[in-house]
Image (cartoon, rainbow, N blue to C red):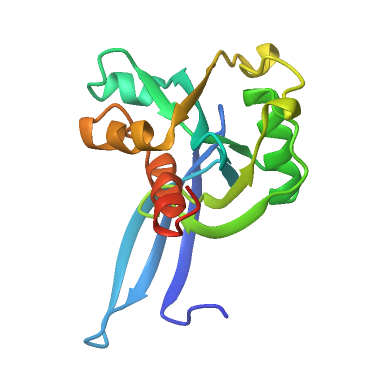
Length: 193
């Protein structure tokens, strides 16, 4: 249902270089009954999906490590982040997307995934909805080395970590990625590992 307290006045495209950055000017009906004109920038990069692979026998998870420029310019000296596998939907449904991304990034071919929740990760400035999945893996599901797709300029290290070590890495700051923290905590809270 459309929010009747919001009236879009104008939308200006500021950049369409990588994805789309828009400046939206709108009127917002405040609780006191007055209309206020506001302007915000919103980055539209499409929706995405993320997954945490886990092995109940080994008590391990699969994560990736890759360079992330925005973290580098915000003070992460190496620019490297340890993350759960993720990717943009690219017109796929979330389940098909995450199966494709899992094989490209981790090298594991999975067929049985479970959607656990969905969330806006940075709703003050980014339009993206992220769909979260988990899936059990075993070493016989490994079909390639993973590491990403070269023509997409991806270069990742695939990490297999004990769940306790991964959770400890949140406390030490070695894992700082929000989606990864959420999925690791979900696995622990649901007593999956």
